[in-house]
Length: 294
Image (cartoon, rainbow, N blue to C red; front, side, top):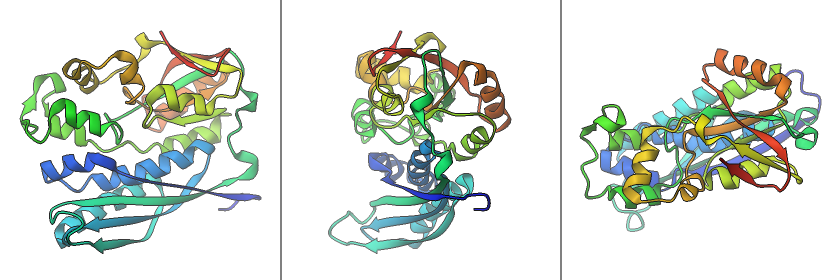
């Protein structure tokens, strides 16, 4: 915490949601902990805060130590990826409340930011550039719809599919949420970032406007988007209208950063050096606080 003169604590809490049903079906429990950490730390990075520590809460129908160890190994990995300390947690055994082979997972993170460095969108202006950081897939939102579309309880989710690049549906859907903390902290060091949005539930239409001040909107170039095959498969199989897709899922964009047009190239370079293949997807425009995808 050296160099912070006016520390402000920032916290975030979340769970993994019904994505856990996929973990049960696949009997794979070592990645959902990453999702749990990601959903918390990706939120607190949006105001410029560096995560300090994380605690988890696991509620189980029956305590199978190996399963709990696998879950916690994912939480620990998420903490490594975000530079947060895992300082504790709680495991609650609740027979009769959860089925024996099921569990729920939630947690919270606390971070810190210097008051003078909290992201401030008051300097946003028309022509500012919207930069996308790619997602690893569906992340942790929209899984009630995903499960219904693919009928996952009854479908074959373990056979590799050509349209998913040789991965199975289960493997693709279970891919852990990407953690953007380290690339974003690197970006904050080098470039004046005006706003950041974590694209979660509500997709583009609900998350991007939260970071844009009144009187402005964002115009997103649909042809620039690198949409992973899983979303195309979802839209086709579920017959889901395009607006609903962009209003539910991240569509391949896990986080966006808004910078001035003169800083855009530098921002892309810094993110690339931090391992993020970021790219420009649109611009800020004068007008209503809406997202327009054209």
